[in-house]
Length: 106
Image 1 (cartoon, rainbow, N blue to C red):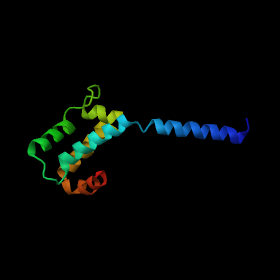
Image 2: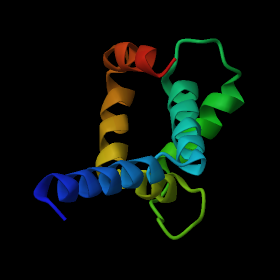
Image 3: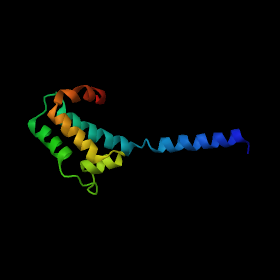
Image 4: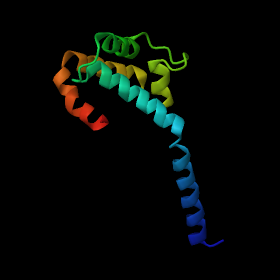
C-alpha cells in the first residue's frame, strides 16, 4: 500500500467516524436542550408553567445518571453540565445577554 493509499484509508475512516457522531438521537437531545433554553429565557409569550417547568429542568440538582435529566442530556452531548448550568444561571441574571444567542437556535 502506498503512502497516498494509506492517507485515503485514514481519511475515509475519519469521515465515517464523524458521520457516526451525527446520529439522530444526538440531534433529538440537542433539540430538547435548545427548546428548554428557549422556553426558559425566550421572549416568546409562553405560559408561565412552561417557563417554570423549563427552568426547573435546567436548574435542578445535577444527576448525570438519571436518563433525560438536564445533566444526562448535557453529558450525552459532550457538554459539561456544571459549566453549562453556571452559564445559564448567569444569563438568568442578565437576560438581555442571552437573546442574541437564542436567535441562533431558531
